[in-house]
Image 1 (cartoon, rainbow, N blue to C red):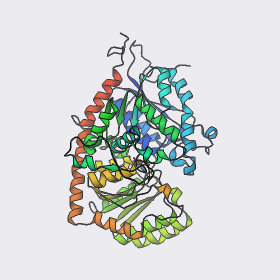
Image 2: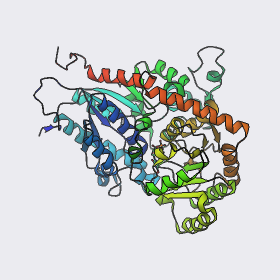
Image 3: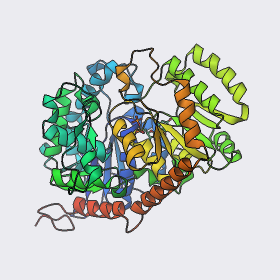
Image 4: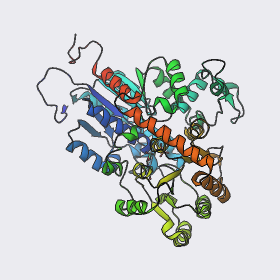
Length: 508
Ligand code: UDP
């Protein structure tokens, strides 16, 4: 049965450019892909966005805004095959998984979308002309092939990670490596013999490609590589000036169009209301939260949050809290609902009393992009998810880097070693290497890093200056004439000009 997209039931004989976006159902992927959808729609592209009931309900206010502003984004809600994949009912987003042992099941569930997506897209009017699939959905390549439409891959992670993982796998560098910590030079980074940074940059197997090396992911990893080789082009949520060495090297090895279109988090930088609605409903009254931030001195508050997926054990939470308290710095700390336990709650009662006006604790989803753009925030303790990193970079906020898995270790190194706007807390092993109750970072390490980051020493000041410089570059990239803005223009042109059709979409 044909589905005519609202507002496009016109009688023209031409097909408007129509792109289908297939995100991975995870916050760090849906949020930037939705920003991209809005940017493309603003530039005249009709967008169909694949989602599921739970994920759609989280972004209801954003969807309502899009409709109000007549942005042509059509949402297709597909039932999520939880039961078929052995997942609890309603487990439609990575951050809802009750255990990391179910990650493979989650990827299996998403894969089951292929048939239903194909059916729904086949029957859509106007017909889609291009697909952009999250890199973690390689099965979407078959759907695009069967619909005979062009396909682009969207990379949510940083280019430093994508390049290092790609090139190390391409050169089969790890096949002879037995020690996962062994540091290996990354090929293709040094332009010439004088390029010291490029020549000396090394990675280990544990950090790139990291968790995709773990048992159970071999098939997915190979499919992702294959889908990247067969894609027509690549869209990345990054900008040239934040990681130029890696963007240039990646463009060379991939040999096809690469559009860097970020930081996508700047999409709604001038719209405070939209910013506090990103991703999910905030677990805090925005008036209370931003009232508190307003009452604090400029750049005095440390924001502490570890993204949507990382979960700390009780011991680690208490150790963080004790270190933060000892630092004497005002703080805004996010603790997820799933991290709460009677022990944590009991401890927090005393903590909040002792810290009084100097602390604000959020239990659950925080309006992070809005927080990081507030003038009172002067530092960020982060797990270095790429979105969080870009949000810090775009707002000129120096970081304490505490990576957990995936691209986060290399993102942390970008922040500390190359951009020099951060301090590393010092963890080297991914979170799943530690025992359930192990505490990788002690109170003293937290206190020391916080004092250095938030202090007024020369190093801290220089870090702040560099953070403001990169913020300016991020904003410039997204403004007319900037590298990402122009890449979006090129991407839109690509989507509009289907091979074998004229500019109006008529067959030639
Ligand atoms: N986020 C948020 N509030 C939270 C937790 C996360 O707004 O309480 C957002 C954050 O701003 C970022 C995304 O969710 O845009 C998380 O993506 P990231 O790549 O940083 O980390 P992940 O959650 O994928 O580990």
